[in-house]
Length: 132
Image 1 (tube, rainbow, N blue to C red):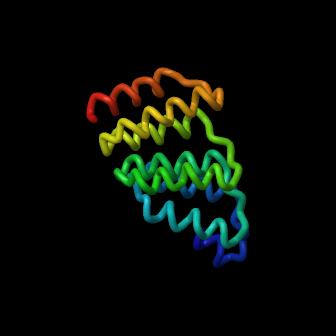
Image 2 (tube, rainbow, N blue to C red):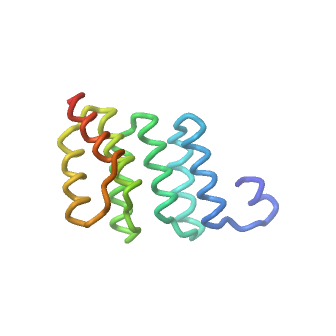
Image 3 (cartoon, rainbow, N blue to C red):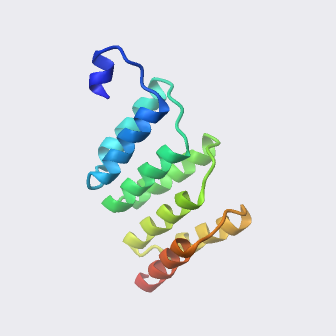
């Protein structure tokens, strides 16, 4: 992204999404993902569900539960649609900390919001409860 800026190429949702996903796939480089999400706001690039999901997954891999929860709250504030993937990643992040109570709350939120649950959802919730 720095090279894009140096060459006067504007950032967009697609390139930023790829960069945040690279942070997640690169071993949970959550600090870079956080910085990138902040910079996206500064240059007025829309942050969408895919970008937030990648950031939450990055936090999950790094064990940064509080930051994952902050991103989830930010999605609500920014009116970004939360998905099955969003909640699965967040529930899994709770598992890193053994935080079973918030994990079960997120499961309830999914039911209330009529967000589809799947095998990953229930497996992550069970795993959190087992660790907690």
